[in-house]
Length: 141
Image (cartoon, rainbow, N blue to C red; front, side, top):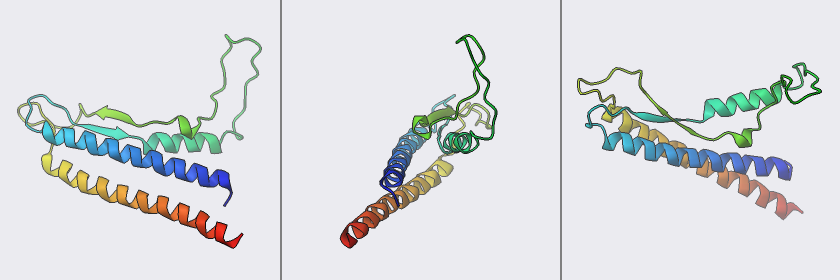
């Protein structure tokens, strides 16, 4: 495991923990507003955008690149750097709402909180594992 892959792994784990923290705040906000008329629940989109960035990086060599001789020409889509991907808050205007226009299911949101906490705990364990790997490697030197 090279130092760069270690840095990338730890960076990705920390980003994922930040996303889980934001998810927790967004979910708590949904619960707090579960009876407010016309409030629409929010969620956080991150993993699907991250996956698209990784796919664009992995398939970059397969696509053809157009030559450009002027900045006004159409540019080929460049692979997205996964480090530029950030979480996005998404408001759910589509799901069925209660008679008062609110679409928060407080029970579902409470289950989401448990899932978020479990994922956060897993991410902290994975981060700890990454550092333990480096510590083990250092002892062998």
